[in-house]
Length: 156
Image: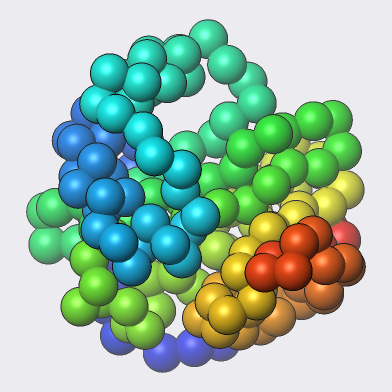
């Protein structure tokens, strides 16, 4: 897929610095709403982070720009055939600057390398940015999950 990169992000492993920034991002009311993040505390976030070392149902990455983390993305609920896509750009001034496209290309390539058959994304119907991004990459609306959410799927 051709596009003009407005910014070039560095794709890295999810680390403690990104974890600490994600605490800030996911407690921002707008981002918390768009990502449908439930309430959580730092202790539970730390336990989750530590659990990643022994889990194979998660694949987490971070996007960095100008030497600082700006985003988190990856796959969760990975099975032998599919996984749930998720991601967010925590630094709002970088929304719409092509970081999400770069993240999406990376995570789809990873899913293909794992020989997954499909990826799905559950998003708010009102989250037009996520809907447009997923549609751009070939995701199709599969079903309504709740009155407020839809599931989109991409067959690899």
